[in-house]
Amino acid sequence: MLNYYGVLQKKWEYYDVSEQTKIRKAFATHIDQLRKDRNLSFQEMADACEMDKAQVYKLCTEGTDVRLSTMLKIAIGFNVPLAEILNFRY
Image (cartoon, rainbow, N blue to C red):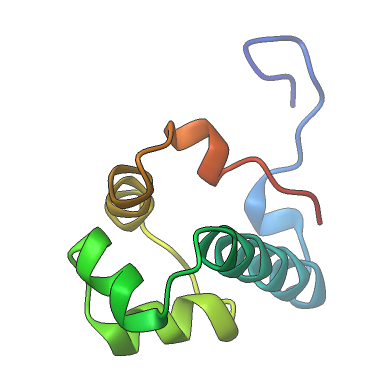
């Protein structure tokens, strides 16, 4: 399937479970690194992003599914564009 820019994309359901897990863990590592770059504890990140500390910890360590609204909270809390939150490799 081609996206708007003519780039070939895989639909999410075509990724097997291990690939999905790899992507989630890569995203978690990326978010955790952004947190560490700002010298924030889990609680400080939670406060900045208006999230629960437990949710932040799980997000940064376990590689869970993340909603767009959560990504927006992180972008606002870190004062960065959403694109920076989504800029990671897996």
